[in-house]
Image (cartoon, rainbow, N blue to C red; front, side, top):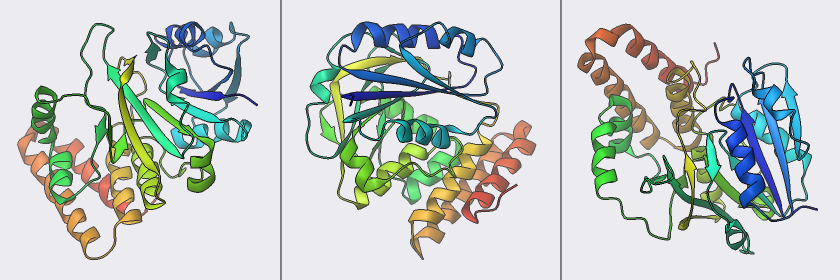
Length: 287
């Protein structure tokens, strides 16, 4: 039985994955298993991964999406004490993770994240969607909101609604209570869904900026962004919110996407497409 099972889903990650694994081997001294699930990369990612005897590599023939790939890894070692989900574009820069895995109660933990080694921490935890936030999220006005949040961000140890999935640490008791990830989320919002379900079961989500890693950002995106982003957002609202608040949130999302279209006229075609994706997600319509 390992103390820590580290799971990384890769997709065309040749630019980042070597540094990521090397940093794990250097800075994570605990008894661990490293599982890499590759979602049919077309670059040299798999060739790089084959050089490491310390990892277990699973090669999917097709891109199965993030949630389904993570579940593959979670099912491989069901008796591990702790599980850490990492993005392929992350890098450890110091030891100390053993202090995070000393907690006995069921808990999900996020650490401090920075874009480069010498940068300040950026905000990597968020509140659950409400009508106002949904409007800002879908309209694109959230960029201004994020700028204000970044300027005023002061990292503090705190319990939060949900954390960014780049560093997503949880113990075995969380999975026993909360189950696996919802595989209908191909990519994006799967951590939002998981934390919301955890909250309903009384599981705490803790942000600990005392420990930090680098998350370069953008290394896990696909050409499907932002279509999948908005579709999954609609699906989340339909799944978790109830009438009439659910419908009010849906209207806020529609209004935001319509405003987004008029603000960015040169992207009218794309924005109408995102509007359709949001509606499809809300009504759980598959392409």
